[in-house]
Amino acid sequence: MAARRSLTSRPMDLFYFIFFLMHIPTTLLVDCQAIWPKQLVPEFVQAIIPWYVRMSGDPLIGGAMGLLANESELAWFKSFVYLEALFQLPVFVLGARGLWLDSQEIYGLLVLYGASTCTTTLACVVTILNTPTTSAATIAQKIISITSEQRVMLLSSYIPFFLIPLYLAIDMALRLQKLASAGFRTLESSKQD
Image (tube, rainbow, N blue to C red; front, side):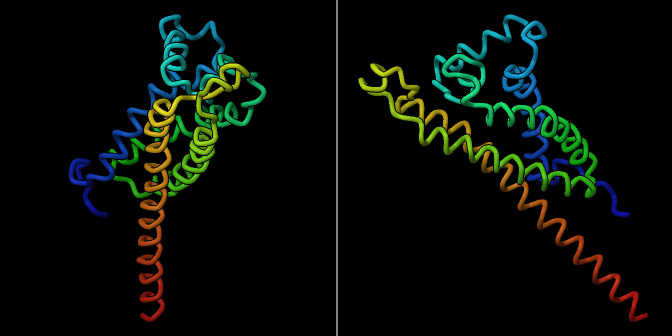
């Protein structure tokens, strides 16, 4: 068995490790407010969402929290929040631990996380791209809309959460393929002996 390599000697693993650690408080304090019982969330934390929605116009978070639209219209997004709480959050912890320990056993789970997360985030990016641009007509008709500046801000915050998991899934799949190939070569050479 090879010696454990330090996390700093593995730049991409260090990047993924930091990504997972940063995601934990965001998931717990912001995203999961859509599903936590309100009495469990401190008031100062509850204040984050209305401030964020006023600033960004985020139709997804605003809709899931009932601030912009009928929550039932965004049941699909709320299901993604449950997925984040029940699958992604544990993966953040397990993934960070596995990367810290330089464990190849975590690669399969990280492929699943990356594929699942980039798929769900793509739906969010497409929704933001298709949200109407604020105009006199959208205001008069009370249609949920965002300004061009809000769209750029939202895309700049959502797109990294699409691209990083996508890259992670590809990276981990290639690592698994390399391990499988080495295993098959070992198996073939042992059959010849």
